[in-house]
Amino acid sequence: MSIEEAQAVPYRYVPAVCVLSLLGAFGVDLLTPQLFVAAILLDVPIVLSSLGSSARFRVALIVAALACDIIAGYINGLQAGHHWSAIAVGDRLLAALSIVFVGYLSSAVIDNAQRAGHAESQELRARREAQISAAIERVRASLSTELVLRAIAHESLELLDATEARFALTGPPITTLVARRGEAQVDVDERRLPPAGISLVQRAADDGDVVAVGPTDALGRLILDTFGTPEMLAIPIADRERRFGVLLVLGEHGERLEELRSVARGYADQAANALEQARLFEQLAERNAALEERSGVIRDLVYALSHDLRTPLAALGMTLRQAQTGAYGKLPERYLETVERSVIATDDVQRLAETLLLVARFESGDRRPDRDIVDLDEIACQIAAELQALAATRHVELTVVKGEGGPPRTIGDRGDVRRAITNLVANALEHTPADGHVTITVQRSGLKAILRVTDDGFGISEKMRAHLFTRFARGDDRRGGGSGLGLYIVRRVAEESGGSIDYAPNAPKGSIFTLHLPAATTA
Image 1: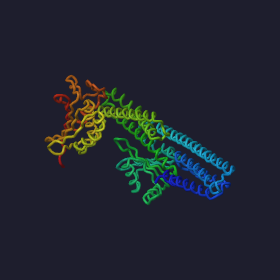
Image 2: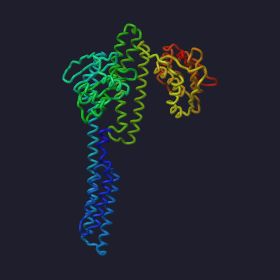
Image 3: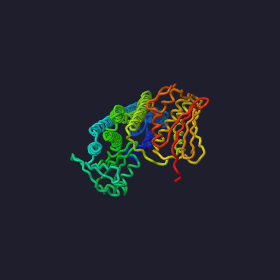
Image 4: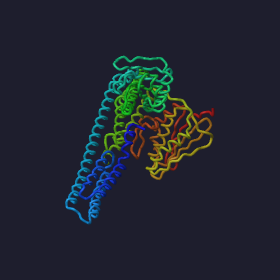
C-alpha cells in the first residue's frame, strides 16, 4: 500500500460517520421539547463532511439536515398538543439558516484548500522539471562517454538529495563509479559488488523501472545493511537499444522516497539520451577518416537528431503525458483533445527522428546488430495484431497465412527484422483503399525463410520501381508521402542479414513485396 493510499484509509469512513451523526442529532431533536434548540446539532455532520466527502454528498447531507429540522419541529409541535410556539418556529428557521451557512462555508474551505493544493503541486512539478533540466544540461556539457557517466553520478547527488551515488556500469566485470556529497571527484571502484548489490542491479535492469529499497522486509534490510544506508533508489539507465547500467542512490529520504522516484524516472530517461549522444559522437569520431566522403549527410543528420531533437522530444513527450493524466490539474475537455493530438504528433516526430538516426548509422557503418534465431511466423502474427486497429480504421482486411516447408526461422537482429516487416505491412495498409486486402505469408523454401506482403492497392508505376529501395525515394503516392526511408531500411536490414527484398506487381492490381532471409537450421 502506498503512502497516499494509507493516508486515505481513515477518510473512507467519513460519509458513514456523517450519516450516523445526522441520525443521532435527529433522534436527540425528536426527544427534546420544541423550545430546547437541539436542531443546532444538525450542523455537526455538515462540518464532518468537509473532511473527506464529495460535493454531491455534502449537498445531499444539507438537504437531509433541513428535512430533519422540519420534521423534528413538526413532531415536537404534535407532542406539545398540536401547539407550535412562535419562538420554537423562529429557532427552527435560525437552525435551517445555520445548516445552509455552515454547508456553504465548508464547501468554500474545501474548494480553497483544493486550489491551494493544485497550485502547490504544479509549483512542485515545475521545480522538479527545472532541476532535472539544469542537471541534464550539466551532464550534456561533454561529449565524452566517460565524462558523461561521471556527471550522471555526480549530478544525481543534489537532484535526488543523496549522500552517495554508485553508478554500476554493465560488464562483465561490473565497474562502479562512486560520487559522494561534498566531493568533486568521482572515483572508480573496480571491486566486485556484493551479492545483494548484484541482485538489486539485476532486478532494476530487468524491471526497467526505479526500485525503491526501504527497511520493510528482510531482503531490503540486507541490501541497506550491505551499503550502510537507511534507504536506497536503484535507477536503470537504458534506452531502446542498450542498457548502460544502474544508478544506486543512497540516502535518507523518508516520506519523500516516492516523490524522488518520479524525479528519478525523468532523470534516467534524459541521462540515457545524453549517454547515447556521447557514445554516438565518439563512434563517429573513431570512424571520421572512413566517413569523409559521407560527412555532410552523417554530420547533419546525427547532430540535428541526437543533439537537437531526441532529448527535447523525450522531455516534451513526458510533460505532455503528465498533463494528459492530470498531473498538472484537471484540464478542460477541449484542452485534453489538444494535448492528445500533441502527444500523437510528438510520437510521430520521435519515430521520424529514430528512423533518420538508424539511417545515419547504416550509412556510417555504426552497426553492431545482435544475432539471434528469429521466428518470422511469430513476429508476423504479433505485427498483424498490433496493426489490426489501423487496418480497421482504413476498412482493410489484414490476415496472416502460414505456408509450407517447416518453421520459417532466420538468424538476425530481432528488433531490426521486426522493424523491416512492420514497415512493409504499414506501407501496404497505407496504399490500399477501403475494402481492400493485405496478406502476410510466411514460409520456408529450402535454405530460405520467406515473408511476403501482398495487397490489392494502388501498386507502383514502372518508372519508380528502379529507385524503390533507395534512400529518400518517394513513389507516386496518392495518399501523401512518408519519410521515404521505410523501404530503404527494409533493404539494409535484409542485406545485413544476408538476404534480399524484391518487388513484383500483383495482378490485376496491387503490390507484392518478398523478404528473403537465410533459414536457420533446426539446431
